[in-house]
Length: 122
Image (cartoon, rainbow, N blue to C red):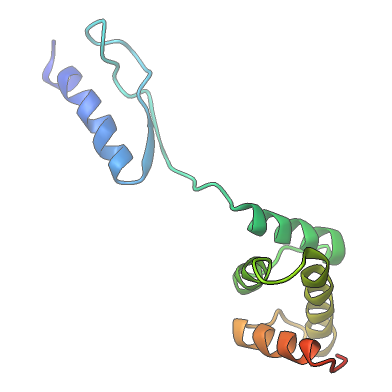
């Protein structure tokens, strides 16, 4: 068996440890071990909350959320009912789009959410 064939399984394990998904089901090199056939960057599964926020933005606003919006509203889902988060999300995003012509920052999201909690209309 060649040196490369003996090294292939270890390469697969090393790449996996570094965060790459290595498909170790390629060509058999000695009847038991397999040489890596494909090595692709690992993709972390998108948490359900982030996926939900992305779907709401698409449904309500016809756009994708910014990184700050996705992170902020996903975290808010742990503290608030879904219906309230969805309403706040829409109100804040629409206000920023109409008034400032941009997406809000994390600090602005926190401030506007605080104002909505106090009953201040946007």
